[in-house]
Image 1 (cartoon, rainbow, N blue to C red):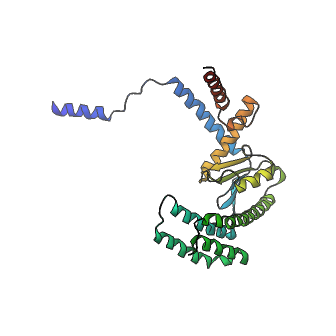
Image 2 (cartoon, rainbow, N blue to C red):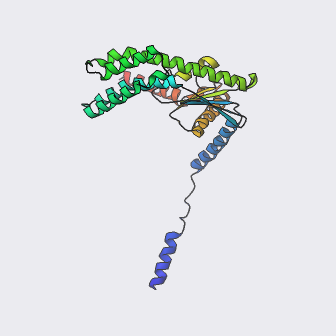
Image 3 (cartoon, one colour):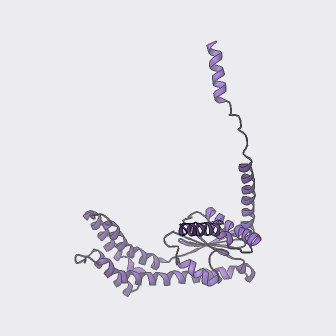
Length: 278
């Protein structure tokens, strides 16, 4: 009797659970979202040339081919790295007493880096890097060293912006040689970047001016998306949502913000008026 009971229990344990009653709303949502996913694939397939910009290269995807162009030259990288000396010290001091060994390590690395920056920077730029290191990590560093070094960091930022925009100009000259006028009109640009740099991001400003339009249609910012499939899926979402917005509301950008945005503003305004009447 015992072996039969054990065999019965094992069979029950391994048997697949009986399907519960289907949820018609969940099934409807699944069906609609599957159609949306398929439409998104078609949107990407028919999007025309796509340019993915950043963080370190520009990739042109067109007619089943890809071409990669370097972005952010050595001068840009050198200026950025030397500015990070100040970032590193401030981070060590943030809500803590900095470890002297960590500060010494930062100083030693900064001094070593100064020996190599002369290869790509002008003499004036090299001297600026020396001043940044001296004001940040020198023995006479003042209590307000951040404000003293800030103008030098902004000069680095200006030179870095010039270098990157020159690189973007060179890359776009190559793109113009590869694409005809009709293909350029269909070009979509994905700029990849981090959350904190989103506002005023350099490549976004560049392509807003080049394309003559703001983010949302031919220009997309892929915030924190560092793999190509995710970046392309975001572009496809923008393309499909633009069609939905135009079709339902006569506004291609309507679904580039929360569909409930206007309703929420109305409800909160009504709520506020209700509070004011009491």
